[in-house]
Amino acid sequence: MAQNSEIKNDEDLKVHVFSSASELLEKLQQKWDSVKKPYPAMYSSVYGGIILDPAMMVIPIDDHMVHRGHGVFDTAIILDGHLYELDVHLDRILRSAAKAKIKSPYPRSTLRSILIQLAAASQCKKGTLRYWLTAGPGDFLLTPGGCPTSAFYAVVIDENFSQCKEGVKAITSTIPIKSPMFATSKNVNYLPNVLSKLEAEEKGAFASIWIDDEGYIAEGPNVNVAFITHDKELILPFFDKILSGCTALRLLELAPKLVEQGRLKSVKTANLTLEEAKGAAEMMYVGSTLPVLPIIAWDDKPIGDGTVGELTMALSDLLWEDMVAGPEPQRLKVPY
Image 1 (cartoon, rainbow, N blue to C red):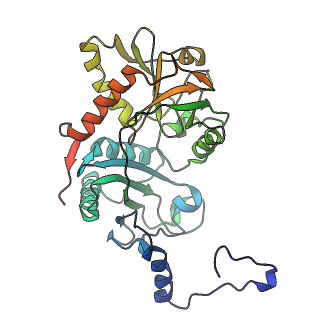
Image 2: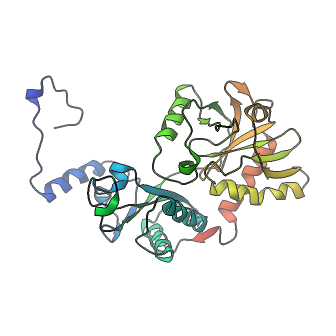
Image 3: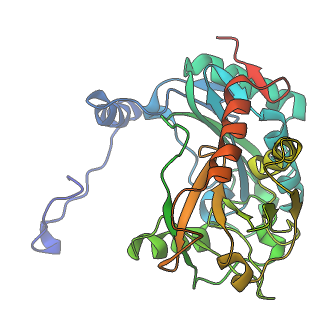
């Protein structure tokens, strides 16, 4: 039965029963025969190896990440044949896993080796490497006591991205913000994030911004936010209630170069009220593939003069240069 078939009466419905694994595999492979394969390689600890056939890139339905959301994830960039900031992202997924009470099936060194070998097997020179630690497959109960072991999955996504130079609009999200316990780890419970992004798109904006329970600026749905004041101070919100974005942290390390050049006065993290933030001279989203995205309007009101700021692009240039030509350990050459 085709997925989009029109069924006039339930009595007309006859669900196909696949009689063999080979028949199902043939059906799965048909899906990919006529399209460009966006996922050149996947690793699964369930299979115990790297998969190159996208038809076989599947996760067991009884994995507790699937039916209970008991999983964490992270991402690394592949750019010009190098993995960018793999180690800091790997450290973060292990911190997230500890908070989620998920014990990795492998030590850190093995996870790292798997990810590097996966990137090499994919032959992808530009894209993203996304990976998950889960409570594992085993049953459909709430807690994972019946799961024999946790699981590790990773996939390479062939993705084209470039330095963002055009400004976008943002809105203040009306979707309730996650509590700090969940916001500070990168878990798969992203429904608030999805709804927040959808809310922005429905209003013609790129994304939204959350305000915390004390009235301070928090973060975007899957990005951090940063501001430049009229006194040329770069300010990012404190990370105590939000995710400490690896790209945002790297920006805080690189931005003092602009202070040395006399272009910025200072670089810091601080609490910002909604009024203070909207009064900024420049504003930006900060995230892995952006790496900096200028925000020129917020809730339909211009930020600064409503154009892409010079200092915003100077910060973007610092990060992009770090991504394409930065030193180790920021960039790791993939052994294709």
